Image 1 (cartoon, one colour):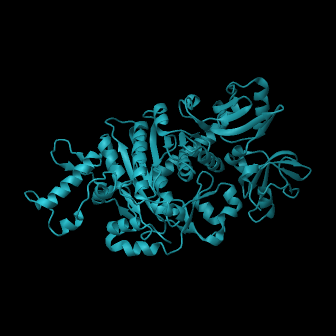
Image 2 (image 1 turned 120 degrees about the vertical axis):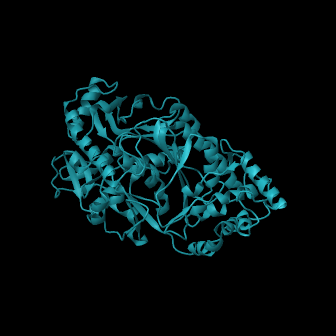
Image 3 (image 1 turned 180 degrees about the vertical axis):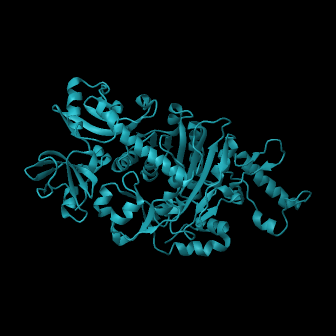
Length: 556
């Protein structure tokens, strides 16, 4: 593929002896990945169930490479939400950010939903996931992916970072900012983006990133964690944005990211390139600073003196970085302080079986205890959290059956219609969190203030949309079906993965199912494949009338 010459020149300067390996990586085939939805199925069960050729992705708990011929986007399990198709390196940010059930989590730039669905799986239906996307069309795609995954506790917003910050000051325990970027790491995947690349675009993206991340810091609770990521190699957007954020937000500290053989460390010395080519603009450094150090011309040893001409160029560059907020004065010191950016992480395509990504993990300092979990707890601790979440879901079934609380502002007829249908559902939900509004039913997140969220800015969905009441009867939604398991509903039509009727159902066809002996001989049926829900159908005399969402249908 043809890559921009300015881009190649920068990469050669950055990579040195690895540059040729980097170029060769672009000649190789793309890697394809899928991430298991652990909200619905364990990794172990998934591997036993699917017919694909899988290889483990080393930096994830639940990610796998697959072969192109597997064609997982055409398999019924894809429509059941058992996995998400995602570029392997793009799985890393949500993997690194440690999220526990019950926390308040924000994915600030969430579309199309790869990282948001991964964070939701870590929450196990507890707490709150706010998934924001400024583009309305992309926000709709985000909502669909969350619904396919069966996410119950999301709040999908469609607004700017500054408006969110006004609504949620110091609200979130964990925040992911997978920022809009120049996309250098995805050139092999997206050749159109490579053709549109320019240094001006890099600089414009860096400006946006620095604005977005500062608003994210405003929304982070003291003691909370912020994960910043891009899919680019540009130092302006990566190390430059991290250093800028540290210079502007002294309450932040950069944390170590657990290592993996495929990772490369962040490079503080690449920041001098910003002075030469990027937002600092006017300074043209005449020689590579690292090369000057190697030659002994520059030295950081006490009492050493740099050559006057070189020292002037170096000082001009550093001053330009200081003016741009990239470098800051260390408290109590007259010299320049450059943060240790080696704690950041990059994935390069010549070092991993994937594309490119950059990550930096921050903590917002807090002098007192606040109940926010420490990053990277032990496996036993994480498993205990999962077990507690499952136990909590089971015990809440009893609460649901005993509850007589009125649902929102619903009238008596609406509530009766809803309860007539809901008697057949045994999912571990609490009726006190169900709201009926103008004939629409929602299962809202448990987070405090959930009832008032959304005032003052656009949003697409607060919680799980359950369905609507028409002509005195409740009609369940596609999203409700995706949040249920076979054992959660009183009557199920369950296809095997090889049954051609599963694909015919997904294409919107009526199918004959009299051989499958559902629990109820008529009425609403939860249609499943191998016990995992696909959607709804209405049964009459052995014929299943198709109620699968028309906008989600498989193309035959």
